[in-house]
Length: 554
Image (cartoon, rainbow, N blue to C red):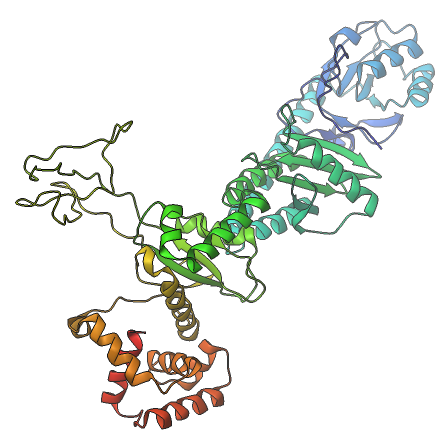
């Protein structure tokens, strides 16, 4: 196996830097020979060679003036030792030798032909009517055409990758598109070699193992790790690129052939994947985020407030992929990033919705009244060691002192922070609670679940639960809750949930069945049972209205 192309960190070890090629793809020798108007003919050496430059020299030893990859053109003016001459060209890395016949030599010397065959240097016969300048011009034209093709290919690949990055599952989509563009395998690996996502044909086990080892070389777990590395194993070209973010994620590629532009296409994918994987930040961080969301939605308010650092308002969102596919941590993290939060839980198990906790915007600064002061006299106060006002400190209104119950108020000219507003996301179906204080997160979680069910049943991209308002808001909450408990007491929790969903969907049997994931006959049976237990006619609009009011209180 060839050694990976990475920096050699051995102290004192000599390092040779290969010459930098031109900003154009190499030209296969066969393409130049196919130009019939040049009349070139290969008479010795291998048929495969890549041309990077064209150079003309009549020196007996042009070695000091060659960079490597040249098609060297010569009429053999000072050719005296063909074997030594060819050896020096091979040592300099020349790609091929073009020998012009006449006026110096009537034919290509037989000794030169034998030397080129023996040392593996392609030898071209240049007819007298073909000037060397014409050959150089033809090579530059071929390079320009190749560069144009490469730019078109890179542009198409960039557009395809950008389109894939906008999909609901951006990371798998980008990897699939990258594997298609390169005709190989594309995988996202952790620093330990764990495969998070992959696309394309899997290489043989030995090549796959070599690719994993190469990925560990660039994984940024230690200072000085290279950002990329390449290797070749059994005819398979391997590449590894470290993603940004410092979490050790690596893009690993395995292809059967390496074409011009592949590195540029891979670089585009690295940038996109670095951005897409940033909210994920590794499996450990995703697990911590999921655990935090679960704790926040199930813990007591006293435990939640210090963790969040804000009393709200908070919005709970439940989300499912529109195509029904499960959402992994990376895909869910990308959804959270698009909504503006890192609090995402996508690890509750297959078939479960992704849960997102969307926080408030930054609160404006507050001015607090000191004891004995009115708001007109109030000035910013500081705690020991503080240099800015405490945003959580209440502000007294005119006529109030700090000893009296003060109300939170914004400064003159300022507005209180508005709660974050979720918006539809392409490829996702979302259900969101109304903005709620930290003390009601558990209830908001249940509301978001019902909103998601409603959105799926109505095929809406987003359903947001509206807070109680209008006439219902005129009834004192305590009295409304007591009335609701008494009215709905005969119903079990599953029956109450079914009735709530059925009423929210205007009595549609089919949509309710979709929202609850049950058969429509089950919905009919449950609604019929609700009517029996409540002793009411559920076809009566007044009955439905009162029941809906009661269900909104629970």
